[in-house]
Image (cartoon, rainbow, N blue to C red; front, top):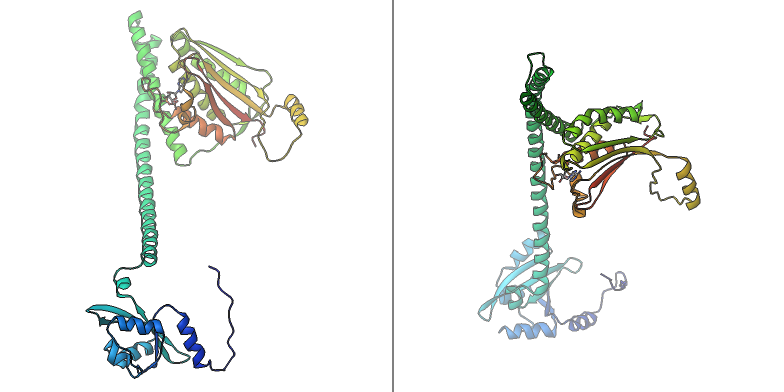
Length: 406
Ligand code: ADP
């Protein structure tokens, strides 16, 4: 709010009474001035009219307390002594209650009385009610925020407990599953007796289901470890081609069984660089698992890795020409991709499939965690992962790993 200029009154010089009278007359509000005993010293025209309209005929010898407010002067005095600068006093007029707002001016030891319109007093004006409304709304909003925060913290705690519970349940499943899988291997090896083709097929299928369960359990354990902040990268100088070809060999059989062709192309230009061998294998395994799951028999998956120039956007201005030269000369990352000829993914799901527990295709098995885990692992390597896909045109999942990952 802009204030008007401050008018400096001459120090120690009494303001002439005529000036005070003139000033009071400039005010529309009914005002009366009295001393502490209630003797009326001044009243403006508007005050005389207001008192008149309430049936009080003004007389210069009237006493504010005994004639108008009907209170003992000591009552007001005591309140002033108690430190109250403004005192509200109700008085009866015209058969209803009205309000006198009494303000003490210590310098002059005067009481300035403003008379509030009884109607205005009974029905608060828009300004007052507006103030109350705003205050009320602010209070309500603060309460809502606090409640929301408390609910959020409670939910977080419940969520943490749920993850801990599921993780311990998943952990308990690990040992029996390993035992079952071991027995399948033993039976399939034929060392416990010769198997018919039918028995072999059934055992093989059971073993695959068991392996899927093992993957789900370990997927969940990985997720809960990541959730509880236990992701620790073991960065070592490794050969990515070894890491990926080992994985491709491990998955080869599953692809053959489903009659999906798997082509693995690992470029020779991939240098030795620092990465976490297990975690990269886990990332790629999740992508291969998805491609196999979603590609129908007769389909085709291409698993590829190559050196790549990753143009990170920066605020620094780099000459376009320099950038082009750098791209040709210095690959700074490895690009790994898994393309399949499956059903594809509609573009509106391209972001959300990387979130926890999001599943678009509910007909296939899974917990909606594979891509969420892959994303966390890639990001831990300071890389990035994304999908390019169109419905009925297959999908390509790609991630980049920076080579200078120290
Ligand atoms: P899930 O373990 O349930 O498969 P993911 O996080 O791996 O979970 O995948 C999330 C969702 O993304 C899946 O439910 C599926 O709808 C979709 N998706 C993932 N990979 C593919 C793919 N190769 N082809 C088609 N859809 C896919």
